[in-house]
Amino acid sequence: MRAAVFYSPNNISLEERDHNYLSGDSQRGGVLVRMNACAVCGYDVNVYRNGHTKVRAPVVLGHEICGELVESPNISNSRTYLDDDVSKLDLVEGTRVVLSPVVPCLNCMYCDIGQYNLCINLGEIGSSVDGGFAEFVRIPNNTLRIGGLIPLPKSLTNEESTLIEPLACCLNGFKRINSFVNERLEDKTFVILGDGPIGLIHLQLAKYLYGAKVIVVGRVNHRLQAARKMGADFVIELEDNKDSPTCAIKEVLDLTDGKGTRLSIIATPNPDAFEVAAGIASKNSIINIFAGMPRHRSFQLDPNWVHYNQIALIGSFSATPQLIHESITLVTERRGINLSSIITHQCKLDEIYKALEITEEFLGLRVVINSF
Image (cartoon, rainbow, N blue to C red; front, side, top):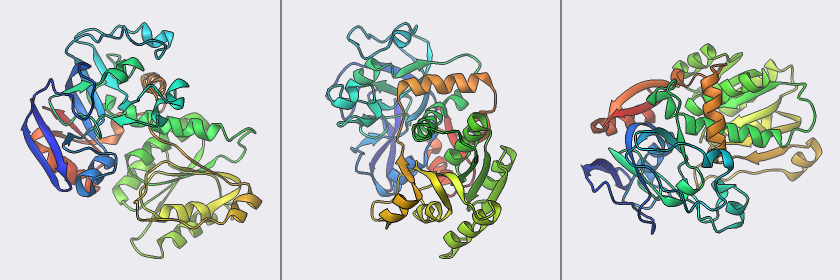
């Protein structure tokens, strides 16, 4: 098969590989999936440029995957990892699927309670195991055992199906937020810091789940215009200078009559976003750090500010197969979650460098590779 193999920062090679090879994992076997489409995540660009501690090169990147089963999976060794609904799924040759990219160890305390995304020895398709920037991807056994292959309804296109996994990650964040909200949310003004695809998915969820008034803060005009079309009540476009955080704080406070916001979601790796989130937080508010940050950047946090203002600072990471099921239901209901609106470019696998460049330069929203 053809595959785009990452070797080191700025070094991806288009080459022929054995499609039966399962990289970076002692498990052999698994199940083979023929790629229909794979979206390019900002994480993929970050790895391409800078590498990552999670990545075991050489490896094929890409984890936002829609494909078709080449063979029927054997999940007879699933033990108790699959719930009743998942165990009844009809996964046969030719079934179109999305997948959970997590490869859990199934031996730690988090795996025991079904929080596979928090596995102590977590592997990930597209990081430690070959991913979707190839004609085929082989799914490890432990991903099968947790129900990590999920069949798709015919109503969803291959392209929008690639965004089911990031939607599930965003949904995970909102479920984390809900665990901190024990009283009725009377102030439903949410601020989303980040105007990329993930920020826009958060926007759609905030509208659908809460009917919230949403302020989107970003730096790219065409993305902020897309946010308006998707229902953002206000957008704030920042200049690329050192005063941007201060300006953003002032504008949000002006829009909220000085009260600030009850919920902020950091959906950008820009380190300034944390300063903004802290500056606009109202009392009894929640800040969710969704995006990973540069490793060299640290933040100062005043514990008295957290204490006296009753601030909940939380994080969310990845998703479980169950959340992917819930995300498919959300999209198929067509009640406000429109993943196709996030997709602006489609490329061939041979155009992997172009796809990475479009993503890196913010030339659109999501790029999907759909010709292999």
